[in-house]
Length: 438
Ligand code: UDX
Image 1 (cartoon, rainbow, N blue to C red):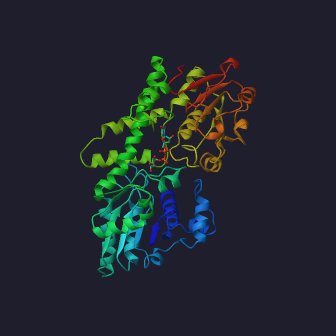
Image 2: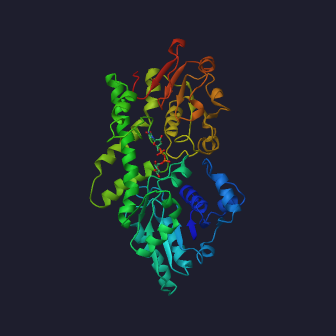
Image 3: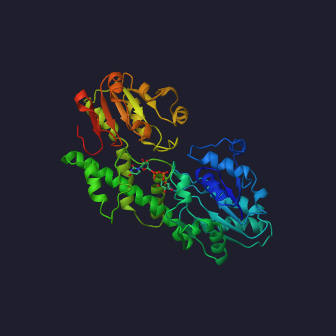
């Protein structure tokens, strides 16, 4: 089957590559000529384990190619996926201009029946806007070509994207025609053979499913952060409470880890967008409003602990930061808790020395010379008055405490991910989330 994917961002590139791996011939299109040129030279614009090799394999096999013109892909493509970005507008709603422009470009070059599928995370009703945009372009060209729209939201996680795509808990597809259903079924056939569930539903429900899933996951995290903060105040240990409640099968053990707030390109944006969709429809999502405000507060918790430890006397203190990306396995720093922490530290007149296994370049672009860049995790802690563990990269898991003790000015560890038990007999002080109080 021949398909096209418009937008080679995170979701677009991973989905296109995986569809090619499953046997489809995939033509990827993006308006960013530089990105396309890089991809054609084998340079991958994002960090995602396993992706580079999979792209190379499928390009060599002739199943995956990259270009800037959708018109070159349209004559053959039976399905076109729209996977362009939907950033937050200032009022929190999803900015659909890229999605609509993609739909228009599809309409401008459609030559045969095509199924236009939205993979970007778009609010309920967006597929209808896609249909309207395509139809307007066809009418302008005085053409009466039959086409369908569908919604196929993507649930992949950064850092685990290929596995999430290839072995999904479910594939959600919103369709309103038999033809669309058949095409999607044949595209996903290799996965159906592996017994993965494809859940067909109406288009608005598919669009809503993506937001509801992310909002539910964000809710679990903010709830646990709230519980953790209370645990500290009443002398309970949130790690025990997490085990205690997570073993109830109705609750489940995943996504119950308290920390220094959720970040990334999805949760913050999608929670805001769902609140806005509700408001536009005369409804208040009160739970989600709280989820958002708890998260904002949580991103400040590490700084507050540091400041409280030193009785607010922190000007001139040196802070070491381990981990800058919003989570391990990615160099993505969008909405990362590290950014809030660093801003607070700089505002308070602290010196900040940072280290991340893959996000140093990204950090350089965002923070410039306002912080110092360490060459490795031990270099970061030299002379530090506190070590902040912000992103739980594997290489931070079992550090050499003796070397750290020697290097730090004050052996204060502020663990935003509850990973450490430090040897207290050496004079270390450990502050974490939900079991230590200051
Ligand atoms: C998320 C969804 O998981 C995915 O299904 C959707 O398609 C896109 O958004 P992603 O943003 O890549 O994926 O990261 P995820 O692993 O879900 O983590 C999101 C944030 O939540 C991170 O900042 C992480 O540190 C935080 N988190 C996650 C917690 O604080 N506690 C947890 O228990 C789990």
